[in-house]
Structures are given as structure tokens and as C-alpha cells.
Amino acid sequence: MEVDTESAPALEAATTFADLGLDPRILSSLDEMGYKIPTPIQKQAIPLVLSGRDLMAQAQTGTGKTAAFALPLLQKMLAHANTSASPARHPVRALVLAPTRELVIQVHESVVTYNKNLPLRSTVVFGGVDMKPQEAALKAGVEILVATPGRLLDHCGSRGALLSQVQFLVLDEADRMLDMGFMPDLKRILNLLPSQRQTLLFSATFDDSIVGLAKSFLRNPLKVEVARRNSATELVEQVVHKVREDDKLDALVKVVKALDIGQALVFTRTKIAADKLGRRLLKRGIQAATIHGDKAQLERLAALDGFKQGKVHLLVATDIAARGLDIVELPCVVNYELPYAPEDYIHRIGRTGRAGASGLAVSLVSHEEERLLAGIERFIKRDLKVTPLPEAAQVQVVVPPAAVASPAASPGVPTRFGRRRAEPVCALLMPPPAGGPPETDSPTALS
Ligand code: AMP
View 1: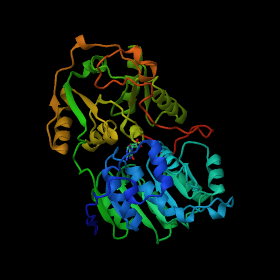
View 2: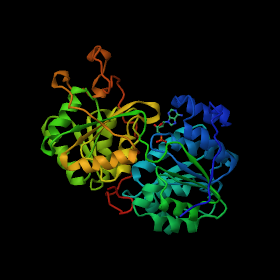
View 3: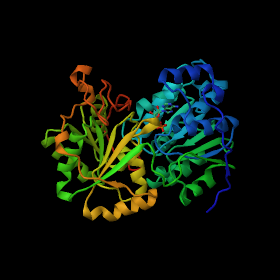
View 4: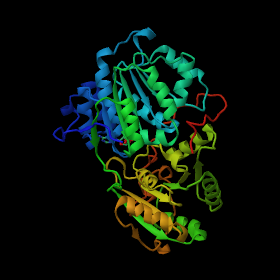
């Protein structure tokens, strides 16, 4: 299936956010965040969004895609910004849809930061928590609504969310929304939106199903691409250790200690494997926590919070559970089990080496997984380096970043992948749980 897209002209001339024509109030929040120059997707997408075009953007995780859509939309909505207390003066104008709770929370956190000097209002709604606080926020009026599709429809059903004035629609991680079976929900939402609107679609991959989605949702879109499909992120050093299945735990502990890795995200394929690994790591005295879709919302928040604070050293996760995590300078990702889908390998390693930071991706590959490894190598179009496990002689105590209170605690230890900073690695900003018993609503539920 084809969609009639033009490729966007190369727009690499702008080198600063000011060159992109953003309002000084937006520039000042970017300055506070330490954003010096726009990332390639930002350079390309921001002028096009400002010009009013629909966009199909292929951008991997960690490329800065959230700011690529959020900044120009804030800029465009400035014309309507007002400080009136009347909810009617704050209709939903920008709707951002994303597949998981973690991702909508993260996107909303970014919006809040970029928006902090502007009188525009925003909120986030997602399943698994009480609807009432979300209803109250919607009722007060918000210009920017970030939502998972299922929960948004619940609010629309109770007339808590009105979408008749939406001018901008963003489909973030559209490929994942389709993988998770959201197409029927997306179509229902589409029917509630004005047909006159600007639509921006972000996806790590562009296969036929995404093209089909674009056909129904977008009008004459421009296509922008910053990382080609099948290309593993350049900034991440990828190594493979071949180990027997039974020796994987020992291998993981050895790698973490030998390389003095402060914190890492460790992937398993299944929830059962994640639980088992989490328990075994704890038995070995390693501070580990587990996140996957069967965990209650509060448990997941606690695990993420522990990781964010540096108390948790290894966060064991399934693919979908890890999707929405915004992790700043996470030094290392470990594939304890290789994923079945090569695309997931890209998503996993994209958790490290984000926005210019370098990172390490270690894969522990058993004999039974060699076919999966071959599939990944075909997908990324290169062979991965197979190396022996690091020598035990290099073993250092694993020190969590947050536990390193002063530089004196680790004088001069050369660490490539450990961190020697007091801040935690995980910048995920979790909102206070909205109360109520955690529940699972299947589309928004994690893996
Ligand atoms: P995203 O791909 O939107 O998930 O962004 C990945 C990370 O890069 C987030 O932690 C952002 O805060 C950060 N980031 C986005 N744009 C920039 C920029 N221009 N300079 C530095 N960091 C950025």
C-alpha cells in the first residue's frame, strides 16, 4: 500500500532553536533544560509543523521527537493562550495519543517543562487509575491533552473530554499503538475530531499498516526521516557474549561487576522470565526490581522510582513495559534474552545512548538464540561483535550512582559505563498515583 507523501526538503540550515523562530518564553525553558542545539528531527520537523503541514516522521526513540512536535505546537497555540479562569476559554486544541501510560506520562512531563512560561494548560489521562482526578483536570479546561486511546474514549463516553475543537493531533509511537491493537480505538477517536486539523504521526518503523493508518488520518503528509529503518543507533556500542542458558545469571553479574555498571535496564522476553530473574538477582544481593504488565500500577511506580533514585541497580523489564521510559544517560542495556522481533532489539538499545550520550548494549546469547541473533544482524545490516565475557580481575563493587554521595567515594575509578554522579540515571518523572485500586484495561495494559 502506498501513501502519497513528499519527502521534506533537507532543512539543516537552522542551528539554534532561536533560528527556528520559537517564542523567547519557549527558548528560555529550553535553555533551563540545557538543550543547546536542536536534534536532527527537531531541525526538520519544527519548521514543517509551523508551516501547517501534516507529517509522517520516522524517528527512533531518543532522537528528541517529543520536542519535535511539542515545541511547534506550543508556538502555534500561543495565539490562543489566555489566563481566563473560564474552562470554555481552554478547549482541547492539541491531542497527543501514545500507547502506554509510561509514555503519556513522559510526554506530558516534557510538555509541562516546555510550556512552563506560557499560559497554556495541559493534562494527561491514562488507564489503570481512578478517572475522577482526570475528570476534574479536564473539566477545568486544557489546551493540550496527552492520552492513551482507551482511557480517552472512556472520558469521551462520559462527556468528560470534548474533542470538537482539536486543531492538532499527534500519534506518537504509532507503530506500537497498532501492535497493541489500538486501531479500532483510534478510528473511534478520529470520528470525534474535526476533519480540519493538522496531524503528525511519529513512528519508529513505516510498514504497510502505518501507511494504512496515515491514509485514514493524514492529509497530503510530508515525510521526514532521521534514522533509517533497520539502522541500529550509531552511538551505542553493541557486544554479544555467547553463554549457556544456565550460565546467563552468572554472566550478567560478571558483566555488571567487571564493567562497573552503575545501573542497567535488563530485558527479558516474558513476564515470567522477568519475575524469575528479578528474584534471582535479589538472592545474589543485587538491588533489582521488575516492571511488566502484570504488576500493579503502584508496584511499577515504586520500581521506577527506585531506579530513578538510584536505589535499584538493575531494572528488569519486558519490551512493552520499558517502552515509555525516558532515561537520561542510561549507560547500559542488557539483553538477557534476545527479543523475537528484531525491531524490539532496536527499541531496547535505543534506551541507552539517547540524545547524544554514548551507551553500551550487551546481549547474552545462548545457543538456542543464535537464530534470533542472525535475524537481528540481518535487520540491522551488520554483524555484532562477539567477545568473551569480561575478566573477573576487573571486578569492582557495583556502586549505585545515588549512593555515590561524594566524589571521594570513588576516587579516580575509571568507569566507562558506570556513573560517578550523584543524580540518578532515570529521569522519569512520575506523577503521584491518582488513587483508587489499580486495574488493568487491556489496550493500555503493558505487556
Ligand atoms: P525523546 O526522543 O523525545 O524521547 O527525547 C529523548 C531525550 O532527549 C529526552 O530526555 C529529552 O529531554 C532529550 N532531548 C530532546 N531534545 C534535546 C535537545 N535538543 N538537546 C538535548 N536533549 C534533548
